[in-house]
Image (tube, rainbow, N blue to C red):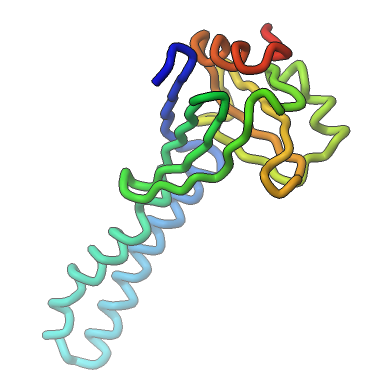
Length: 172
């Protein structure tokens, strides 16, 4: 990585909709277990009940990683890449954009009105919490030409990198 390249990984906090998603998934596991046991006792074929731990383990293995995603954004060679990581196994790159071609890079409070007025077609959220200290918004056109906004949490090093690649980057 170069002098002005930067990488930040954050974990989604369990609050708001994410908390309810986690509660819903746990409820799904409990309902699945109860329904499985009801079928086992209804059919009186108790031996099939021995498979319950295995099937429950597979269900949890396939679904729990979506409950607590990590967000990774990388600033490298003038590009910003946003990736969502599910359970340290599955990485999905959501968007990448040239920083120099961003229409606006500023703290969310400073560009809230601009974002409302242009109504971006796609919104990418890399904020780990609604109560994030330093949220920034990057307004840009993605590879398909759609107006998009990416919300990120920043550090002084990230702002330095953004400013290096786009001189119009605003600071608080």
